[in-house]
Image (cartoon, rainbow, N blue to C red; front, top):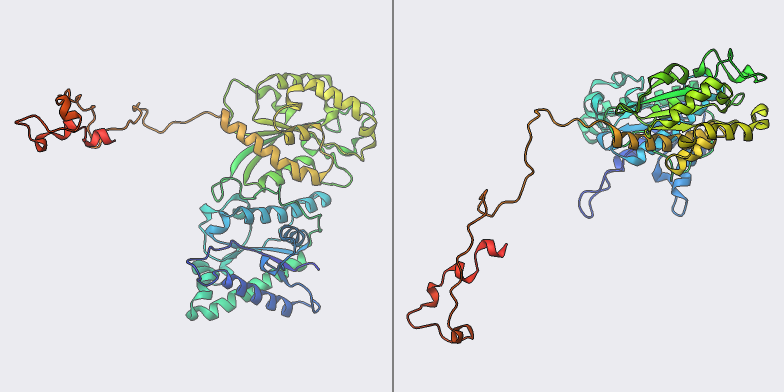
Length: 454
């Protein structure tokens, strides 16, 4: 049972004990959309017109059911709101669906198809949207002026906007049906939600970060003797190690995956950039180096890779795609793997377990989609540790703050005068000396000032 659309929304916390469920309005929207979709299509009775997480029955595996719906649904419908882009779970749902589009595009040699139909639950300024959302080509103005200014939440809550709500929901349902009928995305194996990252990144709705992708591979014009040209193009960026399952070059598939993590990306060839690396300069962005094992068959390229490996650049992680169905590669796998490890011993053993696994060989596109986000996150953390620090403007040196006394004195108070001891009989609990009134003993002498208590 494949749901026609998947409704992705951020749960609103309940205000006060025993108060109404704030998500009941989202459920009403979901039911209205399902009714329209059933009326606008020929879905048979019993079909799942839509899916939202309230549909999961008690005792059913929550993450498994959610992953299965995202792996098979036709359209993804996110309800935009400030809370939505702050939700890690919503970011995971977005990433899981977008992975399907990326893999579909890789198999068919096309950009990822757009099967995301966003809806405004609460209007969000464009500047507060993460990259994956701001890049969507979608015109909300066709749903009505009041919809754009108040969102579906404003329309559904106010009776005076009942007609505008009905019109907006009907237009949204028509858009869902149109996309479902014109854009088809292949189902995939459900992803493991324990390792799925958020499409909104750690920066949430903040502007996208930058990352550079470099490819070290040959072109079809300078291949090693006997190497088949069917995996290569006119330059390194056209290298396609997963041919024939994938028809899209690895550089563009990796770029799609990383852009789906709220990054702005740039691409380059290692042959063109090898002379521009300088480890003495602070990094300006994290980087990923995608390496073809066959690249070490060219001695000049192997020497450049070896020199690159000797430079201390922990913010650059290596990914080595390796196709098990490449018969030439399988015949020389051990030889090429050993030679690459001898050429780049530092990078091949650098970083977390995921980084080492990526350097030892990524067998297919599905594995690339799973491991690449972990490699990117590791590179981003290393970049933050080594990037140049920019102090606040002004340039004036300020002393470290320090605590002051309760009266706000910048200087410590003068030392207390020495205490005059009472005669022994008084200290033992006897009477005070003649001529001394105990009420005249100062607070300072009793050690009972504010400073002494603090």
